[in-house]
Amino acid sequence: MEGETIYMTSQEAADRLQVTQGRVRQLARAGELKGQRIGRDWLFRPEDVEDYDRRNPQVMTYRRRKAE
Picture 1 (cartoon, rainbow, N blue to C red):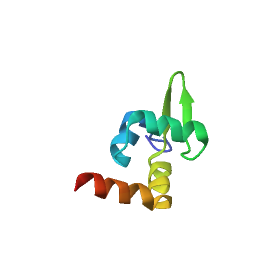
Picture 2: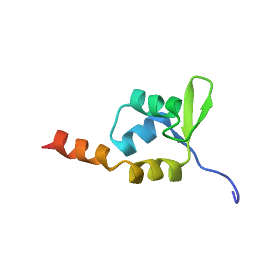
Picture 3: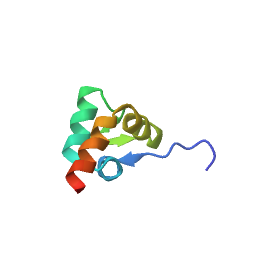
């Protein structure tokens, strides 16, 4: 539908950022990753997850080291 906002779950955001779901929730609670708490879980706009990923290149460096 037109005008609908698409959200990602904390697990989908974790998969995209290649971190744990707990880490995503921690970032959201700290205000580092914009999200909306719904009950016990969080929802994130895909553009906010991408923005966090661009602003935090050190996370990518950690991912590369971990993969090697």
